[in-house]
Image 1 (cartoon, rainbow, N blue to C red):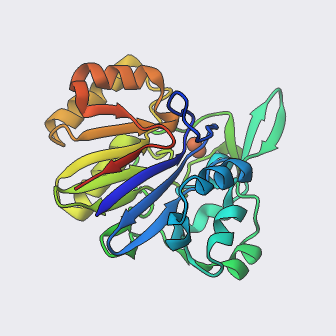
Image 2: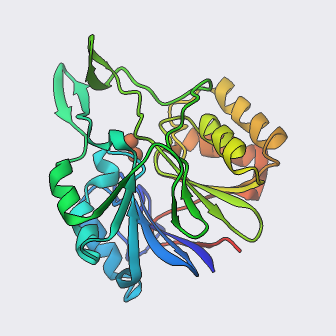
Length: 276
Ligand SMILES: [Fe+2]
Ligand SMILES: [Fe+2]
């Protein structure tokens, strides 16, 4: 079994009992274990949506965070209560203070929990290189080569040696899952850039990428970059299946669906994918 359920996304299906919010949380289930990837924006939505899954959340044995932003870590308290002391996987840069600027005001959008508190409540695994969470499910580690377009923004900043700078999102990572057909790349927000992330997975894991799932941060990509993404997906990666949500953006979803037809699907909260 290799199954992913979208627990939280910006969208839900019509008449779904699941609640939506701007955020992402995915439940990943394999024969080797169950893990939660990101926790959405609010404790209320995560608690409500977990409740709808019945007993399944009780078997979650690990947690991974794609990056620190509150739309991925806001439900952390609810996730930690599922199994106190469980292993949590993230990049070491997770605790860097991060801010969004609007009308010259700085709003904190980083992790709301201190490193000390988190270390007390989980078995903390911080690594910038790939780590196997359960057999067949890996972190990508830090995306080192950013030669393709990435999601940096003048409005999302960190404080550096020379003052405020656009957040380089060193904490951003995705997951890689081995399925019977090949690799699935599972993205949280993909601030490091989809093509950068795929290139690193391609280089490090050396198996075909058959599916890309989650938030791909193409929301600000212009038409030229979207065409480049289409070309690379077709020519380098053999047109993998795309199950896209969160920060992918409607224009990107339409451009990709125009190129790859029904190999592209939205992935709203409350829906599941069987990857085998
Ligand atoms: Fe983000
Ligand atoms: Fe996000």
